[in-house]
Image (cartoon, rainbow, N blue to C red):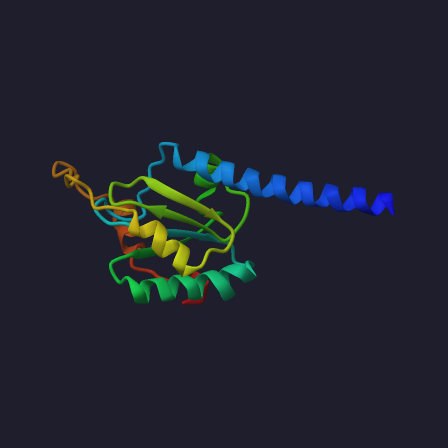
Length: 163
């Protein structure tokens, strides 16, 4: 009987610690200086990180982000494979997919959601995102092929394997 109680308490403690740790990592990730070129400055949006074998990505996160785009058509959703974004995954300490990164119009990550998150939570996070006070433009630089590709990817609203 005592052994069962000890096991239950240990499991509950482990779950509480893991949830705290994920929250701490997410908060720490939003404080880092991360350069994202997935869509142009001046535009808020969501970067959804996935893997090809992720069931939650396909069955839960993809429909939630589609509903989000129906509710707010001004929000861009970009799907990126974690294999393509290995450096970003390592820098932010992302440990699971799906993961959604909410980005403000100034290009800063404001929220990191590790695991499935529904469109209501994303709507709350995006409502706190404001437009930039001053547009950022660099007229002296021509768009590189990589920048052009990333801009084209910004209109994709589904993972490549779903198209």
